[in-house]
Image (tube, rainbow, N blue to C red; front, side, top):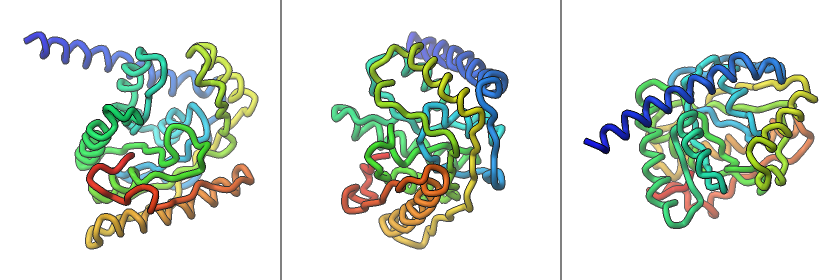
Amino acid sequence: MLRLIKKIVLSIAGEFVWLIYSAIILLIVPVVVRCKKNGKPPPLPSVLCVMHVGNFDPLFVVRATRRYRTKAVYQVDGPYPFLRFLYWSFWRFRVSQDPSIKESLNKRTTSDAVAYLQRKRTIMVYPEGYWNWKRRLYAGVAVIAHRANVPLIPVGIENGAVFDPDLDHLPPLKAARRVIREYSRRKWVRVHFGSPITPNPHLEEKDDVNRIMTMVETEFTDFYRRFYNEKGPIWLPEQHGVCTKDQDT
C-alpha cells in the first residue's frame, strides 16, 4: 500500500515538474534565444538522433517539434542527486556509466524505450553520450530504432555549441546562469531535421545497427562540418560490441 502511495505521489509531482518544464520551453526559451528550424517535422513514431553540443539541446528540439511530451534517453551520474528526479520528470529514460548499475539499468531502459515507441511516440537519443568531447558515437540509438522498427531522424543543432567542461564543477544555478548568458549572446539556434533512416528488420540486429550507425556518422560529420567547421564523431563498431543484449545506450 505504501509503495502504491509513493508511486502515485511521485507521478503527480513528476507531472507538476513537467508542466514547469513545458512552460519554460514555451515562454522562457524564446526570451533567451530564438529557436528556428529547418526540414520536415519528424514522423510519429520516430527516434530523434540528436547532436549534443549544448545544455539546452532537448529544449530546442521540443520547441522545434512542438511535441512537449517528447521524452529522452539521458545520463545523470553527477554530484547532485536532487537533479535525478527533475530529469526523470522531463525525460524518463535514464542510463548510467556507474558500473554497479550500468548493465541492468541500461538494458531495462532500452526495453522501456522500445515499448514507448511502439505506442506511437517520439524519443530523443544523444549518440555522442553525456558530453561530446570524445568524438565517438554509441550504438544505443540504432539498437532502439531497430528493435522498435521505427525511423531514426538525424537532428543537427546549429549555432548552439556552448559546452564547457567547467560546468560540471559549478553549483547548478550558477552553471545555468552561465549557459543562459552564452545562449543569449548567440541570439538564435537552428534545429535541422535530416532525412529518415529506416531500420531493416530483415537484417540481423548487429548488421542493421552497423548500417544505421554508419549513416548516422555520415550525417553528423556533415552537421559538424557545416555548422562548426569541425570534425564529426566517428563510429567504431569494434569498440562497442555491436548489439549484444547488454548494449550500452
